[in-house]
Amino acid sequence: MDEISKVVRDYITREYVQEGDDREITETSPLISSGLVDSFSMVSLLRFLEKKYTIHIPDADATPEAFDTVERIVALVRRFQKAEVGSV
Amino acid sequence: MSFNEAVRNHYQAEIAGIKSTGLYKEERYIHSAQSPEIEVEFPTGSAIRKCINICSNNYLGLSNHPAVIAAAHAGLEARGYGMSSVRFICGTQDMHRELEKRLTKFLGTEDTLLFPSCMDANAGFFEACLNEHDVLIADRLVHASIVDGMRLSKAVQDTYKHSDMGHLEEKLVEHQDKRSRLVITDGVFSMDGDTAKLAEMVQLAEKHNAMVFVDDSHATGFIGKTGRGTHEHCSVFGKIDVITTTLGKALGGASGGCVSGRRELVEMCRQRARPYLFSNAVAPVIVAGALKVLELISATTEWRDKLEWNAHYWRGLLKGAGFDLKEGDTPIVPVMLYDAKLAQDFARDLFDEGVYAVGFFFPVVPKGQARIRTQVSAAHEKYHLDRAIEAFKKVGKKHGILGLGRKELVAKFAA
Image (cartoon, rainbow over all chains, first blue to last red; front, side):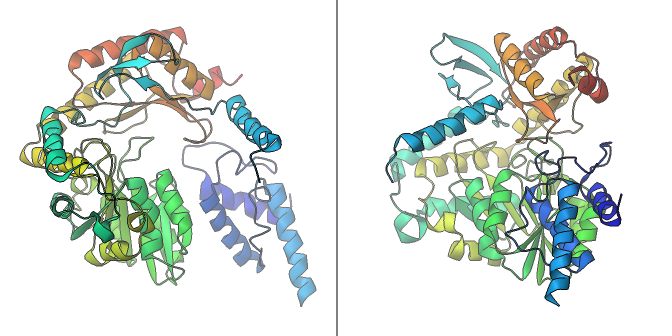
């Protein structure tokens, strides 16, 4: 598992999973469509990723579909990391 | 574009999708006044049957109280049927202001503004009072109307884990760069029946320079020693900056809601809250009824005391029968089933046994948290609850769930 994936999984577990809920977050666990992360909570996740990786994810790309699994979130972060490098 | 065949097909497919996912909602026609025993036609066209109602918000049993009906009649005679105006054009009668003053006194706040509903109060407040310089920090289980209201506001939006004060404090620290912070919670959570930790919340708000907003719709009139609400129960009466609440539940159950709190915030709503500005004044008949309700419950605690006893008794009956309940001490007692289909089947079987209760499942509650939400009323007599528990036991036995905890229930219905 790569570093970004671990960071995202740890954050989601810490931030969204309630105490007593023993579910495990995998690369492909549905986050938004399962109701674990709602649209407001998604905003916290977006802010966390932008701060952590010094990137900017435009609203048009921050869709519930793009945030629905750890796998997709990692792909999104990578895409914008490249975009930031490209823009320098 | 006309409503052509393609458009019709689109909506028909949407509705079919709602049906196929088990989320289709159907009204059941009630042929009597709201009370613990109602006459229900369901499915539509079938014979009317008498049921025990264990799912209304008629907490104090005043929705059909003779004194409230008489006061409403008198109000109708004295001030007419409708206002045909929004409040600020020609829709404010003396009795609207009188009700706002009485609510202010009852809730222990500085001022109050009536709205057509608490849904409207929540939809209007955030946009009227906060902007992009501010942050809204909400409990993750707040009512849908708060979620909608927050979406309409330009303020930054964040959430904290349900009733997790450590997580809330992290968020308050994180957002110190904003001009103001507003902590948002339900007083009593409508789906779980638990009570917000208002004493700790007020302490945190003072420490981190934040305001506190409480939707007390499922508490006003009966939570707290004299029924003032969650703030009374948690000993922070007078310390909540904004309370929104409804006249549509314990306070007569007709319709109408309000924003009550700091004078300036209420005034901002009067100037800017769109549901207040652009919808009709609450009808005089409802204002008159609500004034009577406040008079009744300010003079005696007999209804809220009976409700407290009933809620305690009902919770004990369910627990004793072996149902898995959400912990709490309010009249909302959720019977946890976890599985959506089981919740639907259970509600249908209860109805066959003469008990009217409703199953709730995703998206109303989180996935895997399906339940029957039961709600007790002061109008219930002991024999209503004794009859209802017999039906619950019979249906519970049929599905083989009595005595099972969360893990066993989830495992049993996982396939």
